[in-house]
Structures are given as C-alpha cells and as structure tokens.
Length: 152
Ligand SMILES: [Zn+2]
Image 1 (tube, rainbow, N blue to C red):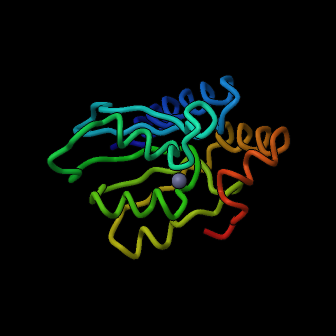
Image 2 (tube, rainbow, N blue to C red):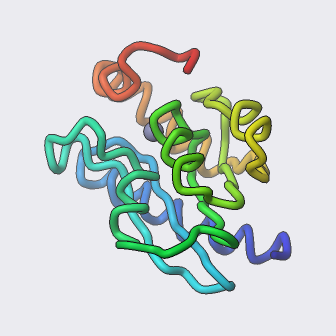
C-alpha cells in the first residue's frame, strides 16, 4: 500500500480517536483494511462501555466480526499497541500494523516485528498532539488504561 493510502487510513483512525476524545474517552482509534477496503473501524471504549479490555485495536477487531483469515489485513492504530493488543494481533495473524505514534506510549513494536508482523511507524503529529492533550487533561484516566505501566 502506498504512503498516501497509509496517510488516508491513519486519518480515518484519527477520526475514531477524536470521536472518543469528544465522548470523554481515551483517544485511541483503529481501522482494519483488507484488499484496500476498510472492513472495520473502532476506538477505545473504556469510559463509554466501562470495559477495560475495549482498547481501540480490540474494538476494531471485534467490529470486523469473524474473519476466516487475517492474511493481508493491515491494522492502523493511532498509538503503539499495548501487550494485550499486540497479543491479539499475533493470535489472529494480522499481517501488518501501521502505527500513528509511539512517543506517548512506547508499545511493542520490536516484539511484533520479532514475531513476523510488518510494522510501520508514521510519527504522525496529529496523533501525538491528541494524546499529549488527553494525557495532560486526564492523567488519571490514562494511567488507568495502561495500568500505570508505560513499559509494556
Ligand atoms: Zn491495547
């Protein structure tokens, strides 16, 4: 997929993150793309649904429903995936992950790569700014979402 398409898809993931931000939730968004088509979009729903496992990537996987294969699927996420989401990515065999930013959360890029996932980091300024603002505004909520662990 071209850089332009990656930017466009990350823009859709950002829209999901921003929607969650406006809802008072954790602003992490994700979209899943297969054969150039968006098959699902989601965002973190910890606050909205009272669900601690509803990270953006997990919500997106759920909304895609049952898939017979994740071969050729790209998951776009605004923030570097935590260990739970990285585990789901490996479990289902998602081929590629495109990450908006990893400044606010380092995530598990090398772990994913070491297990054969193609990972690209866009270092997207809008994604970084949105998380910056959220963490400044609601540090307690952010801490809750990552269980106070910035290293996983
Ligand atoms: Zn996660």
